[in-house]
Amino acid sequence: MSDPQKDLKELKPRHEFLVAIDSDGCAFDSMEIKHKECFIPNIIKYYKLQPVSKYTRSAAEFVNLYSKWRGINRFPALVMVFDLLKDWTEVKKRNVLIPDAKSLRSWMDRETKLGNPTLKAEVEKTKDPELVQALAWSEAVNAMIADVVEGVPPFPFVRESLKKISEWADIIVCSATPFEALKREWEEHDIAQYVRIIAGQEMGSKKEHIQLASDGRYAKDHVLMIGDAPGDMKAARANNAKFFPVNPGHEEDSWELFFNEAADKFAGGNYSAEYEAKLIEEFDKLLPEVPWWKNPSVTTKS
Image (cartoon, rainbow, N blue to C red; front, side):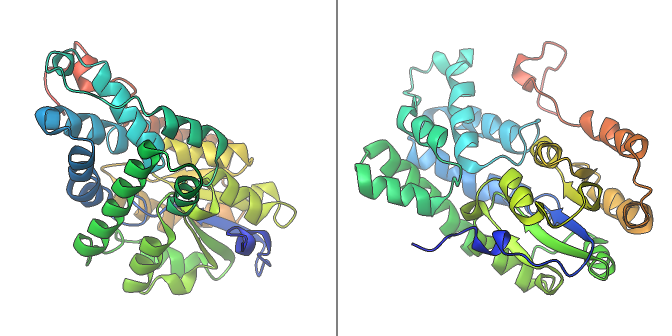
């Protein structure tokens, strides 16, 4: 069996700098359409949650779009949705069976490359019906994304930023999205030309992507992660890399700032801890930990 991480492990630097960039919600305005039109309808369908569909939708949107867990891998996100539903008073009153997801949790505990290929291998080995269901759901999501998501361009200033930094940095796509979708989207809009590697969920976690691509090749202060979620920042921190946040809801402003100012600071050695901290402080205010239905100061979803 070929090593899915081979390209990352064997990356040969062409420049002194490495920039890792998340895709959905960061480079592309694709988070809303993917989750609202592809992920969530299939959660409701495959897990028979039609009687609590409005609660499922709210829980899934909170986890994947409007919370500090935004951008996490689809399988941990799915389990988080189940946990939120189990704890929701109105859902309990409906007497709907919410999955415990014990087998899925067990698989996630021992596997780092949380994608369809590794899940399919586990299904073939165990024939576990819960994992069969999770794989069917995930494959349906991918099929719907391929059918529905097209013509969604990168945010303004993404193309300009990629062209600019590709002159002095090696760029990798660092994402929890399947490779097939990433490749299709980056090639559709002719920006794959600027990146060395497109790393999706099959290559492991974002933390692994950065570690495998950078270790022993780049100085720590020459590695930058650009992302729109706290998980992206954690992946950067785990590798002592710098982080540039793309603020949810203000993506255009973030990319314009990166193009006009932050990129030059990074290349010039002036991307200071103080500068980074100021950006992160603003970013951190945008994503809550407590869902709106548990927050007494909020009466409706924002």
